[in-house]
Image 1 (cartoon, rainbow, N blue to C red):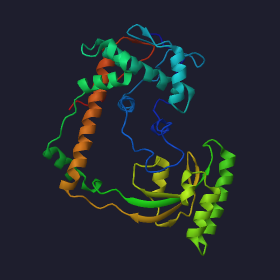
Image 2: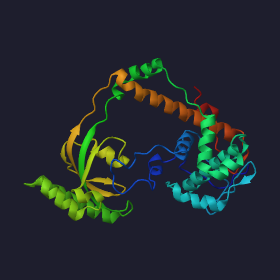
Image 3: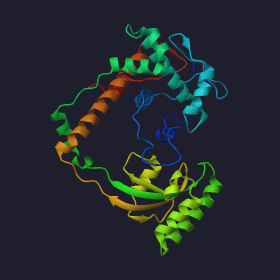
Image 4: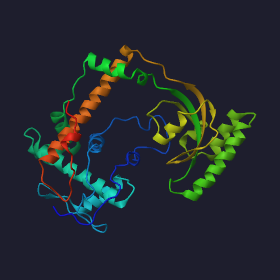
Length: 324
């Protein structure tokens, strides 16, 4: 395989960016991320473990790479269209992620075709179901026993607590993430509103009024109330900031991809330690997910290892693949 001048300098997949998908609404509420991983997301997570060299795609910065999988050419137009689903720090990295996704999909398609109980008809009937059925047949997670769960619990019991529970309301001064000057002005506005709320003789009424007047979140109709939230239910940057706050109005505005937030924590209930018996279902699920993830990585390694991939080298080295 010849490699020309394509040389992405930032080859680490930006997980934070990959999370910015169309499923996250402008309102960071408890329903935003309450959905199971799709097979596509699991595949992308498994691939993120793989090492890859600097020179990956035979291409220049002005040319979409020529890639084939077992003689099947990946359509350059498809690579160009796929870029929109893979935000990255550079055009080169976005190209790589797009090409990688299509290479893996082609590997899975060919595996479906070759499977005697699936075949071409299964793919043509429903591609996503065919991929799911293929993975179910080839990836069997290990079901952990009580001893395995106990070992994990004893190694780090402080991990197993009930999730903290917050009751929160907010005012969203909406702005695109790249609107630098606008965001500066919005942060000034938010700081002034926070100062007014902190000095207010009737904070509850003033917060509701400000939410209805300034917020561009649908929660403004409820005075900015987001209800009870636990970790994992809001966008990461909002969660990281909010769960570190005490009860009351945050002294600083919180900035997320959606804009600038004025946040008040109305109540806070910290997590309580769980006993082993209480934590065991959680631990068992964690171990099953780990086993499935590693098994999926192993399966993808085998597919790529046995394939003739031209124009891209995934380099999923065996030493990087867990085998339990």
